[in-house]
Image (cartoon, rainbow, N blue to C red; front, side):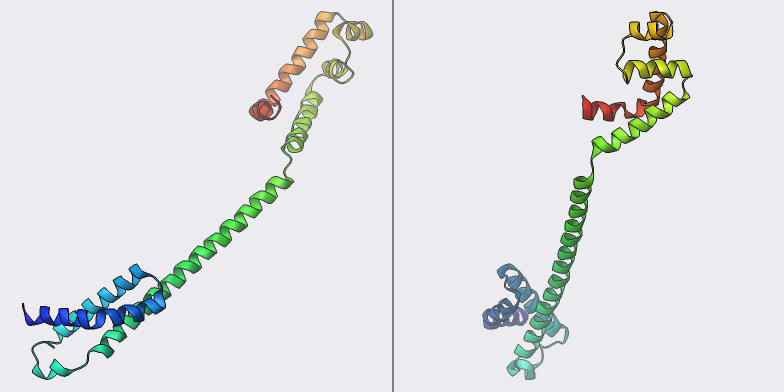
Length: 191
């Protein structure tokens, strides 16, 4: 076994447990702690290898614990900072989602689709009827608003029943055309 490998094993065996307890006291996660400690020991070993620490005889008695614990501290600190940012972002998202949800709930609470659509439909019906010839409009209103039969309307204004039917059909056709965009909604709410 090379001196570097022996040195790595020595570092690992000597410092792993203390490093683990140190990091765990801050991050409170076994998996994250294991990752940080392993990364720190590897980072220390790489650093020492680059510094040719293993080849220099005078380094054999030097304590590397301060350097290792500096690396551990920095890695734990970076993890906790990242975790704080992540949690803050999650909380902000939850706040935004909660706000959005409350807005949607409030909108649905005050929304009365029957009233909204009936107002629109009533306006369109009135506008469409206003555009019809006066006699057609009068016959339709007598039929629908006053509830008179075709025969009653025919005798009251001295026209044939067929003419009454013609005017009502003409009114219904105009209304159907004006309300064509509302038909799916109308069917959804009133079918």
